[in-house]
Structures are given as structure tokens and as C-alpha cells.
Image (cartoon, rainbow, N blue to C red; front, side, top):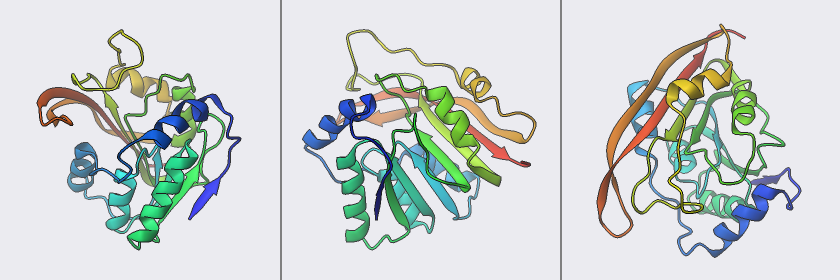
Length: 216
């Protein structure tokens, strides 16, 4: 099932839609390794989840396969349609795809898990404000999980010639302005070995933030 809440002419849509439309690979990738680790280590029970900026839908599909009711969000209409088609083909009726420019709208909560993986863009979209508004969609007892880049691999996609810089997890946590109703469960940088599209490997670092809402 799909839902479209946006004007297709937003700057983010104008940037990302052609990339998704022209992509040679349209199948959903495996889930992010950090997400799988966190779901296991935190022993998260399935509930309602919102995946911010779902890409090709690998994380959303994996969560739905575990029993989560997932709302996958993307600004690209092509990406949303492909996620919906994939969910239908695999019988994942718990997976719903919604088109949102997240700087303008968010899916209606509450959610037991709001998740964003590599939530970065060369298009200015007010990332900090989006994450603060997304945090307000987390139910009491639920979690906000962010997996951010802290470094790039040699094959990483880049916008321009300059090496990108990323905030530390502590800096990102401060910008969330969560207040006293939250407990921080993870705020760390973690190294791993990533596999490139040509079979090469490289060490990369991820920033991982997990915060749990314990009161409204």
C-alpha cells in the first residue's frame, strides 16, 4: 500500500527522484548491520515502526519480516512504488510505503520505533528539525534509533569533490533537544568492515544513537 502526502516538485524530490528512477538495482538490499545488532541486543519486540528515508526498503522489509508494522517513508515516488510492489510480492502486508518530504510532513504516530539510517542529503532539508519532530512521534516506552555516517568508504557516493564531515554522536544527541523524558541507551562510534560493490572491503565508522522515551 502506498500513500502520497507531497507536492512532487519539492527540492528533495527533484534531486532524489531521478536517481531512483535511473537506478540499475531496484531490489531491496540486506538490512543494515547496525540495525540488526541493535534489534538483537536490545531485544526489541515487534510493534509499530517508522523508517525515515527508506531508500530501497531493505531495513523496512527486514523489520516487517520480524513482525513489525512498518511505515517506510521516501521522498521519491519511484522508491515508494517499488517498496510497495516488493511488499506485495513478498506478502508483507505489515509494510506500508508513504511518500513524504520529511521537512514538510511525517507519518502519523505514535510509533514504538522511529529509525533513520544514514539520514544525510546534499539537499538542505533541516535534518535536526526533522529528527526533533520525529522524536515526538515515539510512544512512551519506544525508541528513536539513528545510525549515521562517521566516515566514508572509497566507493561511497559523494556530492562534489570535498570529503564530507559528519557530527559526532554526542553533537547529534544535543541537537535533538529531548529533555528529561528520555534515557540514552547508546551514543557511540563503532567501526566495522564494509563490503564494496566490486568485492573490495574497507574500514568505516558509524555513529549510533539509541534513546528511549520513558515519559511524555
